[in-house]
Length: 191
Image (tube, rainbow, N blue to C red):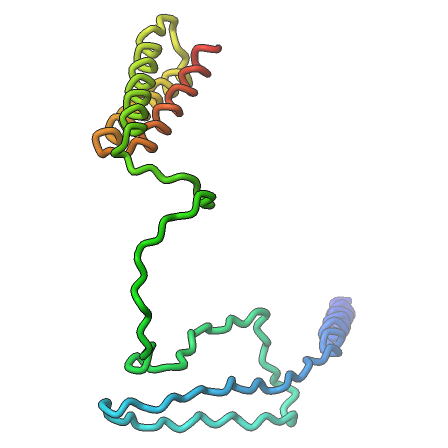
């Protein structure tokens, strides 16, 4: 009885193994190399020895019993091709241009210099925002949950960073940080 089971198992195994070999591997055409653009070598550099191109192996279909597994994804190496050598780059001179005044409809918005009258007003407004936010924090008398205590810690961190930005004359950054602190305080006092 055990020999009959062995024969049946061997037959099933052979059927599975034979059933998997019917799929043929497609033969891919050989890839050609991109043409190499060569520039004239500079007269001051020594000539480099030429390296012979590697020979492609002879591909034949005489050995179908040992196919190599094909990788699913091939990564291409992307190397930038240089058409000119460093000694030959941009021999023509570009005339120096005076710094142009940026157009009024700049895609990044209006840039501030920080030294004009509006800068002083912005500084005063930011200082007032920082002070009012601190007074609002000090005015909280109710017991706070752990999440609310973390929010208070974050508000104080924003205020410290805003003061640091003011000392570094970063008015926009200071105002942004003070505004973030104020928004968090408003959310905290709303609850």
